[in-house]
Length: 319
Image (cartoon, rainbow, N blue to C red):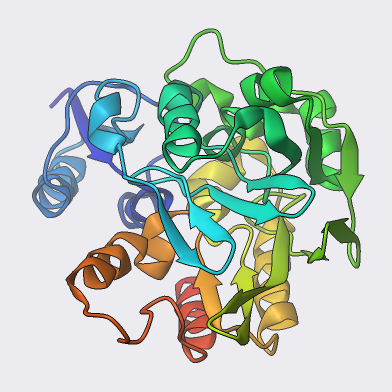
């Protein structure tokens, strides 16, 4: 039968497909984009006939312009500056800018353009935070560091991973031959608080998706009301599949993932932020914002969504 290329756009679909197909390899083969449902059905049939199935990661290296999203303000001093798949956020404080996750290495130009088109200057970036150390969340960090001299942060265990087992950054999937890992200026651990101006970001370690995944919690003010934002650092189960674990180890990760979800389940959150846009329906909410009239409720503000999201994550954690 030869090879079947399963070309999927995000981590969640990749994880589901790997579990479904019991594929024994995890690598990228940038060939073509296909409709997900169709190719999964074709791949299932091909596996029955003995075909080799290749899981392929996104099309961000081949079709960069398709990943463009016009940046926008979510609420208060919080802005979305990411792309169609990987989310990045900007917090505007009295003492400079904070960036949360930096996206793919192949979408550096998009991120820089998003920052500038909102009227901000890259030179004013003071802090660059990362939910975890996978290529699709750290890809633009080196250039932001070079242009701004901002301080870079990464979870302690992912910082150790960079030096001990750098292949777990999944940089081989980046579609970018020149991409190299950065050296974090500071590491983050459970209970850390990162402050710039009056913005205070609480750090909670939530390992599972990666060993050093962290989640962030902070307040924003909108129309005189304070809302708490929550960014779960790693919701994807692609790195928890049997196929992935059989190659890279990390047998403890599944238990850690569930423990992490339970650990942050009761955190009060008014604005659920995903580090991939599908996790909190970022693009759908933005379209809703654009259709709304003055005075209508901000679709990002939903105090029930956090638990709905975590419940979906827990439902996927059935090995």
